[in-house]
Length: 32
Image 1 (tube, helix red, strand yellow):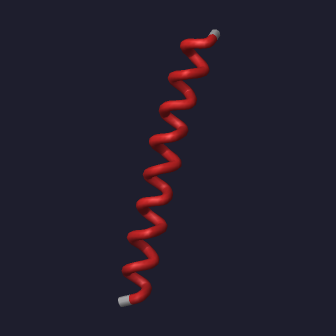
Image 2 (tube, one colour):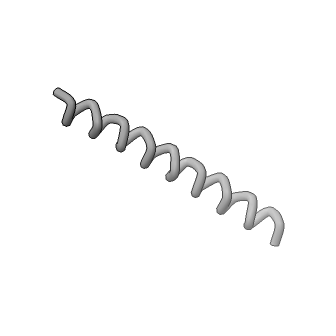
């Protein structure tokens, strides 16, 4: 059970980073 819990936390963090990546790419393209 703890394994699943940690996996879901990891997945949330990864998707959060992906979201952030997407946003920063958009900002960079706006700035250029």
